[in-house]
Image (cartoon, rainbow, N blue to C red; front, top):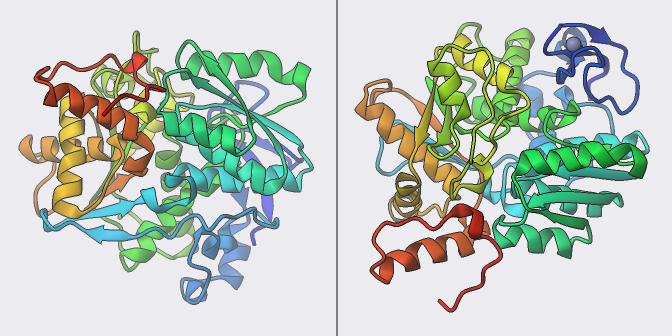
Length: 407
Ligand SMILES: [Zn+2]
C-alpha cells in the first residue's frame, strides 16, 4: 500500500502534511488530493503485480492508502460490450455492494476514518451515497447520520434505516441537506463525509479509472460518458490517469475525452461549459427523475469543468423522457437493468453520435453508475402514468419518493 506524502489543494496547490482525518484546504475550501510517492510505488508494484490480486477495488492497493480495508467486495465490475453499438462498452457499476458506484468512495473514506479513530460520520445524499455510507458505517462499526431530500427513491431511505444509520429527511435538495450537516457537525462531533469535503472518496472512485485501463488491456478509450452529480468519479478517474502515466502503466497523451452527462432539469455543468465559465451557478428549481443528477451545484464544479476542457470533452443535458427510454433500451437490448443516471449516459451517447461529436468508430466507455432495482418506485410511477393514458406528462420528481402505489 502507498505511503501518503502530502495532501494537495485542488484550488491553490498548497501542500499539507499528512495529518489524520484531513478535510478541505483551510485557506480557500478547495478539495484536497492525496499525493503518494509514486516513484516508490513504481519500484515495488507493476501492472503484472496486479495479476492474481483480489477481484475488487483493493487489487489496486499499491495506489491506495495504507490501512486495513473496510470492504464489502466493491469494485472490479464487469465491462460489457454493447450488443447494439459495436464500439460501445458498458461499465456496469450497478453490481457493486449497495447497488451503485458510491460503494467505492465510501469504502475508501470509511476505511481511512476508522483508521484515524473517527466514531461518528455525517453526509448529505441525493440517494445512493447515503445507502452506501450507512452500509459501510455498519461494517466498520461507526455511527452514521444521513441527510436526504424527502423524495429520494424509497430504496435509499429503507437501506439507510435498515443499516441502523440516523436518517433525517429534508424538505429540500442535496444542497439544503449539506447545509444542515455543516451547521450541526461541530456541535454533534460528526466528521463530514460530504462529496469532496475529505480526500478519500476520490481515492475510492479513482479505481474506476484503473479498472477501465486494466480491463481494456492498458489502452484507454477515446471517450468516457459519465453521469455527473457531484462528479467525484470523473475527478477520480482523471487522477488515476495521471498516476498511471507517472507509473508508466499507460502511455502519456492518450487520455479519453471526458463527457459529463446531466439532465435537462438540472444541467449546471453543460450551461457553465457553454458560457465559458470556470465554475457553475446553482441551478434553480432542479428537477429530474434521475435522483443522482439532482445536484444544483457541485462542490468540485471548477475541477469538473477544467477536466472536460483539458480532455477536449463536452457536457450534455438529456431529457427525462430520453432517460426513461434509455432504461428500457439498456434492459431490452443489452440485458442491463440500469439506473436512470446510467440510462442518461446512453441518451447522451445517441445525442453525440447524431451531432457527430462522437463517431460510431470511437471506442467509448459508458458508465452505468447504479442498479435499476434501486428505482422501482420511480419507474413504476413513470410507466404507470403512461399506461393509464396520461401521455408523457412527467410526474414532478419532487413528489416521487416514498410513494407505494397500487400497481
Ligand atoms: Zn487551497
